[in-house]
Length: 67
Image 1 (tube, rainbow, N blue to C red):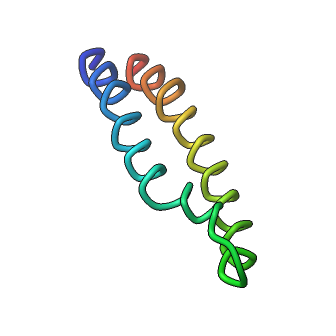
Image 2 (image 1 turned 90 degrees about the horizontal axis):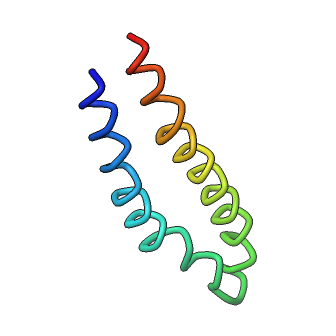
């Protein structure tokens, strides 16, 4: 089980940052009406994904190790 916990914690950040950089961060810099609509959404999604990454990298491997 420890091996799976280590593998998960190594693979998650790379896929996470790929999605974050390619989709949500550029939305925060769009100007005009579209930017006004999507900027709060993009910031909210980025913050939620960062919190999810923190849990996935720290708490989930710990719980897997305890099983």
